[in-house]
Image (cartoon, rainbow, N blue to C red; front, side):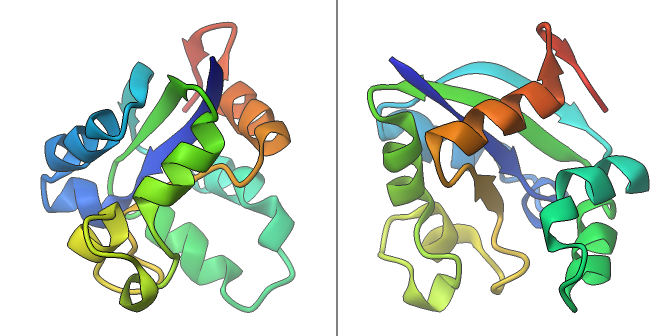
Length: 138
């Protein structure tokens, strides 16, 4: 079994569709092994998305991620990163396959309802960022 990290983003929590997204996650064979609804602080969002600090969209991303609560999750199954990336769909919902989270629920390329780790190494980093010693940070 492997793990990956997920965030159900502010656009989705604001529209109260967390349960619908979780159903797609579970229907894909992923098990939600940890989950917590938090309100990201500006510092937390800036640190988490620090890799994008020099990019022009950074401030908008931080503002968006702190605008409403988010749901941070640890997901588990065989090849969890790949399985979750497939169920999320393309970053731009216009390019996402039918039945994926982003095709079904995203509003646009930024408000695309979910974040997921892009590699096993990043999954470990992201899980540790929010779930230190099984304590939720945030």
